[in-house]
Amino acid sequence: MNHKLIFGSTIQGEIMDQKNVTDKAPLEAAVQDLERAEAHLQESRKAEALAEREVAQAIEEVRDAEREFVKVHVVHVNEVEHANFEERRTATLQQVWDKSYEELKITRNPKDVFQTAGEHPVSLMSHLELTLEKAHREKVIENYRFGIASETGGA
Image (cartoon, rainbow, N blue to C red; front, side):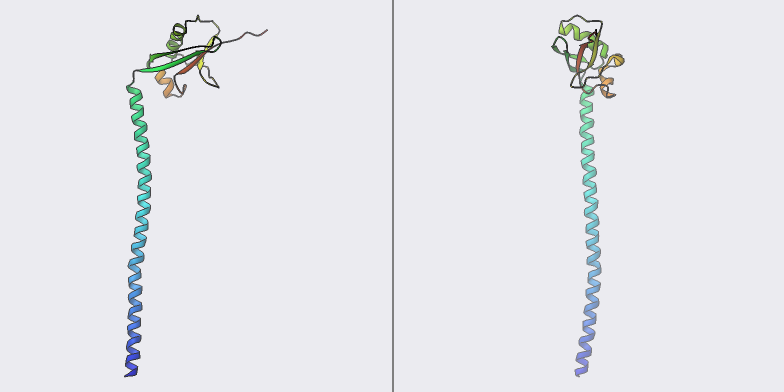
């Protein structure tokens, strides 16, 4: 009878070991499924954040497009005069340049150059036919701030 008890407990121990192995397989699979689901959720959240940024940018572009007028700021570099005025987005850079003289109450000098404003101005002389809207869209201008500079003569 002793053998039966020992043999019985050995068989029972093996059955328990098999059950533990069998129980671990579904648990490991569930943990892997959970990890996969968390990774998918993280990817989805990144995609959602990107989509939200794209929507916000598109809304801003729509608002910009709906505005018929923009605020223009012009500085005459040599005269240290400045003017602010509203202009249609469909106005050309040439029209903005022309209106700038009226607003600044300064006479045009034949050597004047229309340019972007800022630390590193860029000449707009070869883009005067572009509208404000197109110049901005094509990144010829970053904003609606301009400068007028007179070329200085040499010796």
